[in-house]
Length: 151
Image 1 (tube, one colour):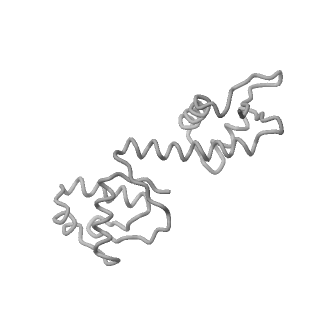
Image 2 (cartoon, helix red, strand yellow):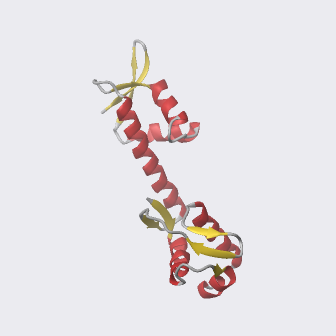
């Protein structure tokens, strides 16, 4: 799922109205009635999310099969992406757990930092804390080290 803001959705819909042809950015600027630097920021954001081809002067729609979710602000985009990372992290933690639901803290950290998600230290600890606060995991100490228990 790709999460975009309402402003990005407005630009994307305008690009879609021109079908699959390349569009001059100045034409979009006139149609949408927004400042050039704002349009540039929105187009770069859509490019980074893999929705458009953008070279600074022209833009073209990419064919994307992913579902697009629209939210109100950039903060909501960050929260939605964090929730997706939390879900993926929790699935990884569940796959690592033993039959009693315990998994070593170091094993979790290694898999989240260096595995498929490649989270930063800060993001990983934020996600682990969030999962604890939501009551999905609990930090426990066992005689052979620090563990998390899946609840």
